[in-house]
Image (cartoon, rainbow, N blue to C red; front, side, top):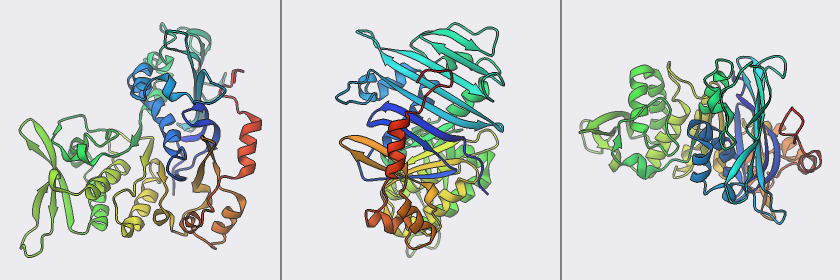
Length: 400
């Protein structure tokens, strides 16, 4: 039985290649489309929210090349971008939304920011415009500035702390075997970092606080790479790395190999599995986003990967991007688990798949992977038109 997804709806405006989108997410969502369609840009919008709250909005934008690289480029020259996330937290629905606009010769400003849990008038709420409080459920708020997200400052208030913790508890992964292979500094191992650069610390932390999760990771890893039987963190002076126990033909006992001797496919598989099952008694991610988890894996490993994704989504919401027919070639993948992404004249369009493909999957005429091979996983054109004409508002307080 799947948990209720943390993020239930995402509305984007002028974010990278996405002019506008309004999509719903479930416990497990596959973003499917060709390379360059815009799948990663959608996931990155969620990542930016977490990134901006964890560090700062300025740093989050700088890591992406600045505001000019984040807002969509088009003949209309948009001067702002906006994000709205609707979520469920503690049995209550809420939303967090903001608009970021450019300032002439001096960077950017948070034009509008709105946060609500339980509905306006029924729970924690605030609306900020250009650094000024327009409405709030709290009698007093700390000092705010136009160039920072207010939720960072408001996380010190008990009313808004759960929202801050949940949004910063999302993890996003585009794994880098090179970084995973290198010696790593000992780090906080509660949540794995985006490229797996602290995976040794995460494995070590799991070994201490949730050994069962580590066993699950090892079991799936052995299914994907049958010769690998175990993995653990080992100290190397002031640094640390991973050590694998592996079968070697002709050897009586399993040999031990450091991460630097392991293949990209093995390291990526371990990274994906660690991202999915890193929950422990101290911390449970609210959402996990993984870029192309099938990369560098043999197609025969797809079944184990699908099973791991489905199993993890019963505890933590999961979003994956993929253009792999092998990963999607399973009749158990439902049509409502797929969002199709296409690029139309340089603009990304996202929606649930078209009615004919939905029907084919529901009647088990074709798997999603077979439809992808046939070029039949396309966004519902009616949904795309509806998004364009309806122009969903980013804010409940009135502004778009």
